[in-house]
Amino acid sequence: MDSKDYLFHTVYGRKLITGLVETTPTPYIVVTMRELWHILKDELGGDELAYVHFAESLELNRLEELVRSLPKASSVIGVGGGRAMDIAKFIAWRRNMPLFQVPTITSTNAAFTHRCAVRIKGVVRYIGWAVPEVIYVDYDIVRSAPPHLNYAGVGDVFCIHTALYDWKLATERGEEKLWPWDEELAAETRKVLQSVRGKTHEIHKVSDVGIKTLMEAHRWTGASYHNSGWNPRHIEGCEHFFFYTLEYLTGKAFIHGEPVCLGIVFMSLLQNNDPEGIWRSIEEVGVRIRPEDMGVTWINVVTALKEIRKYAEENRLFYTTVNERDITDNMVEIVREHLYGSK
Ligand SMILES: [Zn+2]
Image (cartoon, rainbow, N blue to C red):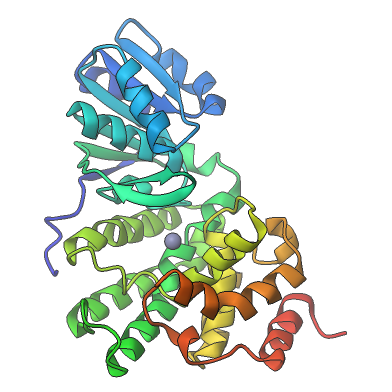
């Protein structure tokens, strides 16, 4: 896993949309978000445009319908957040067309993953195969997004902190047969985590360095799922399971990284795994982790914590800390004080 050869070709700079029309085979299909089209249409809305699709549903049957209805084209350009990236990948995969991706926020690693996160009756499934020609990261476009969306991107990197603990624990307990602990992969993953923890102030400022640091981490984690043999253990653990439980119980739509970071806060404490250190990193970035910022209540959070083992077992999720330890009332109180101060 030392070689960088398997990572997607990524270019950082400015005014990168301008060059796209001279780069991509025409006519092209653009997948973007409605709210971005006014800044794109002068550059991409000319005669070379075959069709523009505004990203909405990720339901598989809706996507199949979309692919059937698309006009003939020679390439696909995705511009936007995770949803636009996923739909662009889906079209490129189904139509076997070259793909150019322009992620406009750092909130997700969707531009850097091989598969598309589609929904089948609301349940997420990762399917497909798309390797973009290139991914363009335009500093000025990313910086113009709401800061909290960019901050949330650290969730899928900081989760390495709690995921590695779970992975080692599961291996020690004899509960991980498919992907036993791999020190080499763990060491490389830790380096990625450290690269982001070392630049939290730049990420908070959404500076060029901050954007590049976080995107490079996404670039590595996104590809590593496939490149480690579809092994999720180093990038997902009980912090994600907390989020799945909360989502299941409340039915709310979340900004992924926010509940994941709240999960990291609780689970690092449960693991006795340097909670103060990782809490500080989350705080330095400025991720919103209070329940009310996510549209849920403190009671919802506590209920999710109590239900997480049952959820994990019922859904046959892999073995983590929550299989053998309970979040105590004392831990809940410690986190509450940390978020709101003592009364
Ligand atoms: Zn995630």
